[in-house]
Image 1 (spheres, rainbow, N blue to C red):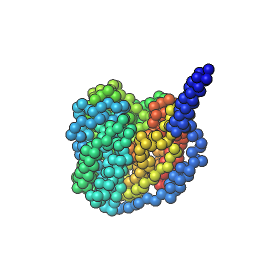
Image 2 (image 1 turned 45 degrees about the horizontal axis):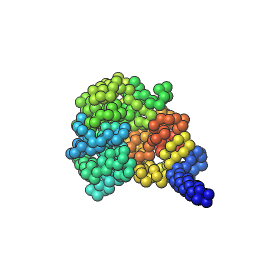
Image 3 (image 1 turned 180 degrees about the horizontal axis):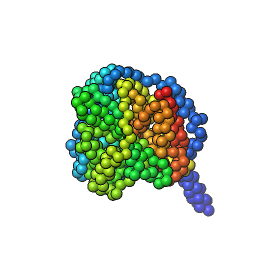
Image 4 (image 1 turned 60 degrees about the vertical axis):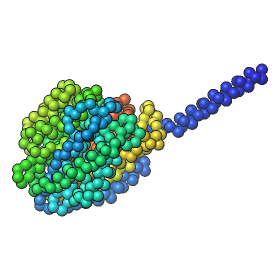
Length: 449
């Protein structure tokens, strides 16, 4: 009897130990979603205080100076494809991968707009590029990072555990290649700078983009362009659009820039010698294409290009060569990588796996045109409200994503409890980020008064 009692006690002890260990593990790894109003949080107070005190570096003259370059940065050896899900190394090159550089100046200040045919510009890569520019003593006063956000681009530039598991890993050879090609591109753009005339224009392309959450919900339908014409008649353009570059199949094994690559190509075959496409407010926006093969990508880009002359509004001259620049760090709620509606991983797990996010806004004002670079993939659903606010102040507004930081998606708060991938798996910093970013961007626009 005592032996049986001892066995029972031992079994209960083991069960208690197992349950206790599981409880400790649960306490260490998961916690509840924080639903407290963002305006009651310290991160909100700190960011809004920084925004209120934000100072712009400014310069003005009567002359715009513009130079540009396109540099091939295709890896010599196949690397992992990045986008959708891990697919392994690309098996062939459909499209070469380029670094595009646009240097804008006014004789007193130079700004470099850098563009990569990559999924994102990771914080590690952006810091390496910034350091390389400083080490070369290049006459660049401000760097504005952009990416095309192709989902069939190469990896090799994202360190850390999740970089290794899901985002193409890290390869110093790739980072060095991008670093070298960026410097080469900046030097070439500086060497080709010449006086230029700047215009802003936009074209409605609403038939080629849709809200990928709810078809009846709003979209941002506009292609927005800055057009530069040099003294010698050469024309270049910087442009954005909000449709995700996700036309190619997730099973496609070729290196490709998706539709932005062919959109640039079409423009460079029809009046422009240089075209730089930057992903706009791509959150919750999908392309309306006829298929998922290379020929469908090319047709979509052609349709987008053919749409411009018919739907473009009258170009607006940007005649005052005024440049303002600023950098606004953003404080955020604790990481909310959710496992269910109300349960999330502890922040330390996410931070260990994903590493630095470098959350911030880049603000660039060119004459009466305000460019805002975001670390979050902002939904275009917000855009109409912001653009109207900017127009009341006599401003053109261009918003881009992938500015050298990455914090996941920023979507309207009404979507937060939905089961969409963007808001369940990729909305990383908790509820009310839609309202929070709406308030920040609205304030950045008003700061131009």
